[in-house]
Length: 181
Image 1 (spheres, rainbow, N blue to C red):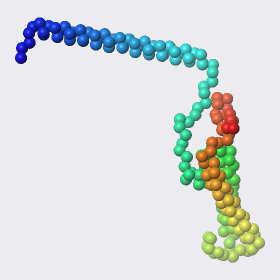
Image 2 (cartoon, rainbow, N blue to C red; image 1 turned 90 degrees about the vertical axis):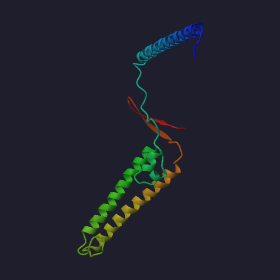
Image 3 (cartoon, rainbow, N blue to C red; image 1 turned 135 degrees about the horizontal axis):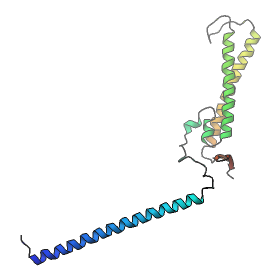
């Protein structure tokens, strides 16, 4: 199909104008983008210069780790640490560690003083009073560990959804203690 020469020239001019306008638009957009980037860099440099003397803000976790009821059932204050009760968690961890050490140490001493019999399978003792004392020590250690574990489990679940009453936040000068009232 053939078009008249006037029509071909007309649409050629229209196409040339449209292409020129598109090139001008692209150039203007590129200039505007470059100017905006330069302005942003200038502002950032000014802001850095203004705040150079100010200490940086305290670092915080990007996101809070997910809380879990399973963690609340673990010993050694894991549930308390999860809930943000760091002091209570450290206290429980220390007390449970001592109670477990007493229980295991008492059991090993009790078993090592037997004259006959396999480990945990009965036997005789040269001094029955000492055997009774050692048995009370290791049973008391394990009982204390169990009681502290039960307390920690209940406490972690009671405060599971509650905000921590005290927060310890690292700062450039050390630690800061804050509270929620």
